[in-house]
Image (tube, rainbow, N blue to C red):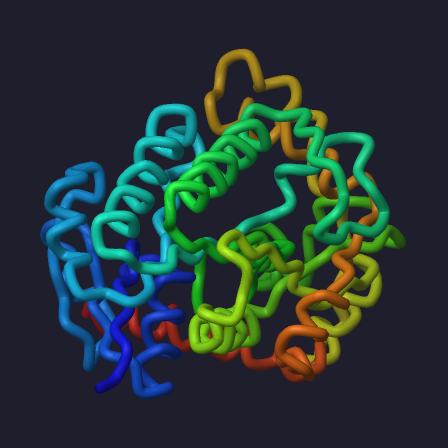
Amino acid sequence: MSSRVLVLGAGGRVGHMAAESFRDAGWTVTSLVRPGRSARAPAGTEVVEIDALDHAAVSAAARGADVILHALNPFYTNWSRFALPLAYSAITAAEAAGATLMFPGNLYNYGSPMPPVIDETTPMRPSSRKGQLRVAMEDRMAEATERGMRAIVLRAGDFYGGGRGSWLDLVLLKDIGRGRLTYPGPIDLMHEWAYLPDLVSVLVHLAGMREALPAFATFGFPGHAVTGRDFTTTIARATSSKLQIKRMTWWLIHALRPIVPLCRELSEMAYLWNEPHRIDGSKLKAAIGDVPHTPLDDALARALQDLRASALQDLRASA
């Protein structure tokens, strides 16, 4: 019998691509999406429309699951209201089903000043509310493993690839039609990126070996740790364009922080673009062998193709 995975948030970018990757690897996949969003779920999966805050309903959907992927991500300004309740829903479902809970972690847990190299032993000292919430979520998962649940956290940098909704399309490429790229930080500082198809491949691999891992297993995903100059030059090369590079106007975001909720949330995270950092993936490599790593040129070329395909799909839908 094939293993079964329940993907919470399968209508989102991470959840959708992970569900496809599990499906393609031979897993039986249940895609949980919000009511009325079944069209956003991957084809070839069982779709359930449930409010993820309904703990009982989520636990019922998880019955028989071997793995639960927590890919729920509230809107940026709603983290303080929903991040922990959604994590509790995922934990409750995993405990009820006797399933391994998987969680794509990020770098918010590490505040400013940010460690230049991050591994599984790096102390977490969050300096933002979002960082504090992320640490609290992972603490609750660790506590649940003491009661018998199993959990895997795969920590990565900023996602890109697989469609819209990342810094790549929302910021860097927003003015590419005018011949400009907008970079959020100093151009010569190293920043950690995670190409999403590589990341979800690792999630599937870790899920397959879950029984051989500690009850609470954490891994860092070494994606593309490159300078802004390298990243933008690669975009220019992929588009065969000569592009002007300009800096993101953080001063305006900081100025609007007291009155615009999104600016307040973004302002807290500005340090991630102003302090060099990378993830050490030695532990992950020791566990799974060669870590999937699409070369940066190929990854960005494919990510740009995905964005063009999404734009074309929108045009067709509106026609």
